[in-house]
Length: 339
Image (cartoon, rainbow, N blue to C red):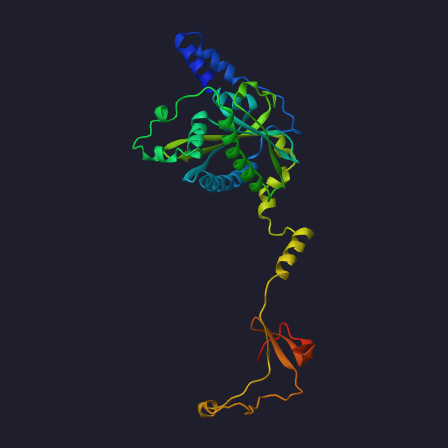
């Protein structure tokens, strides 16, 4: 497995080669040597492509729901789209985000690990402005100068953190909802932080999945990141398989069957009982008056037909029950066809 260099390492390497500190021939010889790296197959550090494809489906739903939820909360149109899913170390994630940023730390029971949601300070201050009533003034501006509208900040006030916490809570609600088909989660916010360098929730070499979303609010377009440790997925790897999602031969659980039956029991059905049929010409019909007798095509001792939603279902006998007209069920006719 080839090592992936960071942008800083690539720049240092190019600088060293241009200055003559590194010999290109030595580099080629080193690259040709067989490199051996220890790998524990009992605890893989990366998800397979099949599982990543499933995560794309889950977080596509997350982006659609987040767009709707945030648009409702901010009362303005919010574009929210999945940009990328990468498997990196926790150290790489920390170095890929600003030194001062907003981090929501949350945990999803019963799965393991602590998850993070990251929003940069420019986006945070724009959200605070909108939620505190600054939407009209921002929309009125013909040009959106980010530096003027949202000056750089090095800290958040307690009120700003409280306002932003409501936004993070909405994202956690969506996160919990999109996983419900895979695993029932109870997601809770454990805290808010602004300095990723001081977080000690994971070791630097801990493998994580970094999910990046693009978000567009008014005329600002930026990113929101989710950091999910590999241990989060260890207990649900079998449920991330395409076979589990699309296998038509899966047997429904007893709870699913009971819930379906409960919902069907509340469905209203139209029930009709036909006493009989009669034919007459228009002249006789126009001269009908109270007291006239209409002859039907069956005897009063013959059973009647019951129709449920237009289909014959039972043979019944008419009568009375507690001074109300009623019918007594005799024979079931389900599945019979008229000749």
